[in-house]
Structure formats: C-alpha cells, structure tokens
Image (cartoon, rainbow, N blue to C red; front, side, top):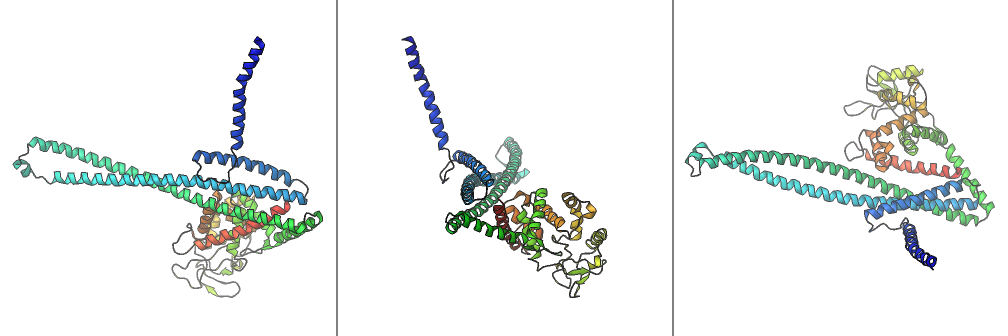
Length: 467
C-alpha cells in the first residue's frame, strides 16, 4: 500500500512537468514565420525574424540536396517549388526588417523632436539671461550713488551678474552638446532611411524573381504535361539559350569585345578581390562602352600640350589629355607595355575646341581610367590579377575589370545594396554621389542599376541551367 501511495503521487508530480514540456513544445511550434507583421511588437518582430531565418536554412538545405539529383521533370519542379518558397520567405524577412526599421525611425523622429524643443527652451532661457545682463550693465556709478537702493544690494547684483555669466556659459555648452546630439541623431536617421530604401529595392527584386519562377513552373507544367520526354526537349532549349548568352559578345571600350562567359569570369575574379557584385562591374563597363558605340577614337599627337587628332577622321582636338598630369604617365604606361603612344587610342574630349570647364578625354581601355589615376591603382590591380605592377595593362580586359571593381569598392559599392551601388556608380561617373546638382549625374547611376538588373537576370539564368 505504501508503494502504491508513492507511485500515485509520483505520477501526480510528473504530470505538471509533462504538461509544461508539452506546452513548451506547443509554444515553440507556434513560433513560425508569419505572413503579416503588422501590429507586432519589436520583441515579436525579432522572434519572427529568427523563425524566418530557421525556415530559410531548411529550404536552403533542401535546394542544395535537390540540386545534386539527376535532372528530371520532378526534380526541377521540386527545385522550383523550393526556390519559390525561398523567395517568398526572403520577402517576409525583408518586410519584417522594414517594419523593424520603420519603428526605429519613428523613435528617432520623436527623439529629434524632443531635442529640437529642448533647444528652443534653452534659447528662450538664454534670451532671458542676456536681457538681465543688459539691465545690470545699464546702471552707471551716479545712478548707484543717487539710488534709494542700498549699495550692498548693488554688490549683491554684481554677484548675481557673475552667476548669470556662468549660467550663460553653461547654457551655451548645453545647447552646443544638444545640437551635436541632434545632428548625430539626424545622421543615423538618414542612414536608416537609406537602409530602408535598400531593403525595399531588394524586396522588389525578390518579388520579380518569385513571379518569374511561378510563371516558369506553370509554363513547364503546361507545355510538358508531366511527360519526361517533353521536359527533356524543353531542357535542351534552355541549354541552347544559355549557350547563346555565354557566347554573346560583351562590348568593351578601346579593345575588342569578348564573350559574355569570359566577361563574367573576369567579373567574378574581380568580385572575389573586392566584394563588388559582378553584375555591377559588368553594368559599369557596359555603360562605359555604350554597347560598343562609344569607343576610344582619339590619338595624342603632342605630349607637351596634350593635343591630338581623331583616329579615323583626323579632326584636330585641343588638349585631348591634360598636360602634364596625364601625358607624362601615359608615356610611361605605353613605354613599359611596349606600345607606341602616338598609335594608342584613348577617349576623345566632349568637343574639339578647348575652353574652361570643357573637360578632357584620355580615358584608357574598357575601364576608362585616365593615366594619372591608373598609376595610383596599378599596384593594387597587379596584386589582384597576379602580375607585376609594371605589367598592369589598361587595355587587358582582365586587368580593366579588376580596376573597375577596385575603384567601385573604394567608392562604397562593396557594401552592396541599391543606395550604395547607385551612389558608387554616380561617383564613378562624376566624383560625387547621386544628387540634383549640376552637371547631372543621377541618370548615370539609374542606367547602371537598370543594366545590372538585366545582367543579373542572365547570370541567374546561367546558374539555373547549370544546377
């Protein structure tokens, strides 16, 4: 009976523990990546992000596993389904991040508002103190002597005056500190706004990819009707398109075009050295070459003046290059590479006649570095491509791609994201971030990012065919 009693209460003791375990499992199971993040607290948003990241890792593992299987209709449908889920999940995660960021921005705005009010209050106090100082300074010695007020009170006012001076100083210090704090808050807010823009841009790209994958899945199912033979025919068509993309001529400035596959290889090498997205490197070079239309078509004829002529037209151009800033290094570069500087093409200036503010030409090769800039970068370029600094060649595509990537990295493109890449493109073109100042530069950044999207689509397509 004693044993039965103990067993009975042992079970009663374990029941709460079992209940807690079951409840814990249920609570844990409920922490999934939600479809809607509206109304969630900051803590709930963070939990949701963790849940989304876990689901993303599982999907990534499934995609990797499925990708290794033999290419069949069922395998590719499974792969597409997983990629669609992955893209939708990425959109969820971006939405959660944006919501989280929006909440931070609201807090920052409130803080800035409070600080602004504090500055106004301090200014009012300071104005009052200054008025009181003026009152004390307005009394003369005669007025003090003839006044009914005891002289001791005037001495007390002097003490007050000293106190007022100290108060004014303290107020100025406090206002200065508050102003600095406000400026820092505003800077952080601007950074967060840029980050939000990047997240939204990324979300839009992911949405486009999701829609494309959905359409691809439906097209495959419709055209093959589940038949393996029809699907294999479809696969051959995709492989044919991939071959066409790889072989398509990638136009370059001041040198012969190369196949896209080779261009992508160079861009990938440059990306590894700089962490700049390959599609952005290719987009910049495409923008610079204008699809092969805008080639270097000037020759330097006089190193002292920088004057030159049109390579094919013979048109005289004054100051093709800025002398001696670029003519001296141009001579050194061509000499060490074994080129004749008189026969080596460079970009022409905007107009034949030079006038103040016209600008110069002299850009070399696909990356369009002017000679003085190339000399500043040559050692880093050479190190990245594995040659000596003396062998760094502006007209070698592999070297030019790396040069472009290094420069874009220095301009902030290695951070990734829409804002960073767009501003880097504008700086590559004009030396300043995208803005509304003159001369215009925003168009360049917009065009480069548009080209980068198209190029990234081709890169993704090639990856999809090879997977």
